[in-house]
Amino acid sequence: MQLVHGLRFDNLRGDIYGGITAAVVALPLALAFGVASGAGPIAGLYGAVLVGFFAAVFGGTPAQVSGPTGPMTVVMAGIITQFSHDPALAFTVVMMAGLFQIVFGVMKIGRYISLMPFPVVSGFMTGIGCIIIIIQLGPLIGHPTPPGGTIAALIALPGLLAAPNADAAIAGLLTLATVYLVPAKVDRFLPRPLIALVGGSLIVAFLLTGAPVLGEIPTGLPVPHLPRFEIAAVPQMVQAALVLALLGSIDSLLTSLIADNVTQSVHNSDRELIGQGIGNTIAGLFGAIPGAGATMRTVVNVRTGGRTPISGALHALVLLGVVLGLGGLAERIPHAVLAGILIKVGIDIIDWGYLRRLREAPRAGVIFMFVVLLLTVFVDLITAVAVGIVLASLLFVKRMSDLQLANIKTITHDGDQSLLSEAESAVLAAAGGRIVLYHLTGPFSFGAAKGMARRLAAADQFDALVLDLTDVPFLDSSASLALEDAIRQAQDRRKHVFLAGARGEVEKTLKRLGVTKLLSEGHYRHSRIDALRAAADTITGETES
Image (cartoon, rainbow, N blue to C red; front, top):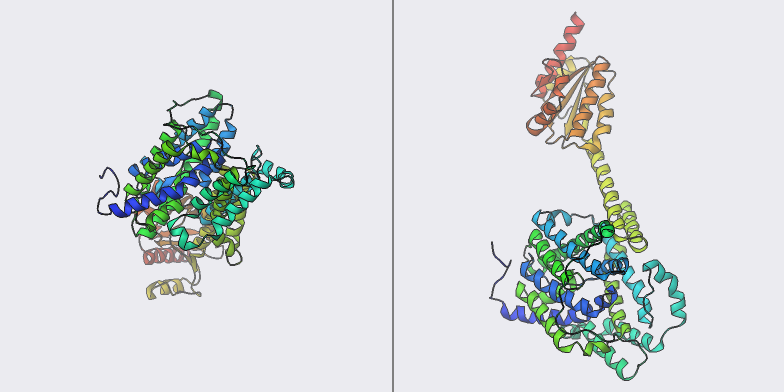
């Protein structure tokens, strides 16, 4: 196996240009995410450096660029608030999240993480976008974000709007104008966030001097810190780490799919999770905020020529050079400018495509999206995702059970016999309406179990039931026991029950659960015609006797 997935040296020029360009885009975002998380701008920069480098080297998506993202920052801000009495615990949670991601990759569950229902992902991402916008409105007009999360920020917002810092508000609005109005042709060569960062900082430095700035930023290489635990806090730490790990995995794998589409390649999901996990573990060790695959930075990298892990690793090394050489200049960056950049990020995260399709989208999906959205904004992320997945799973089971029940065909002597051969139709006709054939098609699972039992039990006017499983490739335990229940009910009413066509795994399941033992001798046949003839012989013999 190749040590660095997708590493090659035939695209060095493109990788160098892509890596440098991605670093230029990442710089203002890393600073902004660091401030928004509560860990500080240097933690955001080192998150971009460490996660970006190690995820590129050990990950499974060659062209992907990783670093702090909006969703991860929102969760990290909550974790830092939760463990504000001992920040070391918060960064231990980051390490634990990285280790969870490594475990996900080793256990090869990356392919399953990407199967999350789309309305859940849509509501989740839209909720995160709303959270970013809400908590950055205060800094946009010169006030710190009120403690207490989204609800506290909303409650405090009218008071903040009533007393804005004029210089900060002007700087923030100019930043928003810049990130929206700079022409696309310019953005290709000089990213809008960077223009806003530099331009806004210069305007504040010389004209709007009353706007709050970042202040002193530590320089130099970070010092590693060993993990720290408090026995009483371990359950909360594990829960928070799982949230970070799941969110980072989903965020990264969705970006990997986008990278695949742009580069016409195929990523390795499990290896990508291992790479992200290594990056986040090391980030937590050095007091940096966690990250994931970053969609915008990845697309910028690819569009400017990046195709291999060299570009992602170079992007991290360029940022490291910036941290070590230009840290002093970052002290003059205004909070309002970073808030303006983040509000644009929050607006971009909102799933406008799905929102525009609300009228045409299935009602159930729309409801799930809004439930997840509201829970994300007003409760917490893990509750939102858990509730969304459960609701979507229940709906899926309901729809599948309806389809499965629709595949139970009741065939009698005077009904539709298009599925039967001439010989089988003749047997039914000769029985004079005393035999009913139930033809089951497709897989049957627990969702259809009760409905199947009710359908099969409603046959009082017939003397014999033939259950045809010829076209059933899969029957789970619940469906098998429902079949057993139907057989018992029919036998209690003195009906003859015949089973036909079970083969392979279906036959093994029925025998293992003892369902076939309920049938009288000769009532279990391998072909439908044999079962019909046996049923006809049985009821004819009863009549003659």
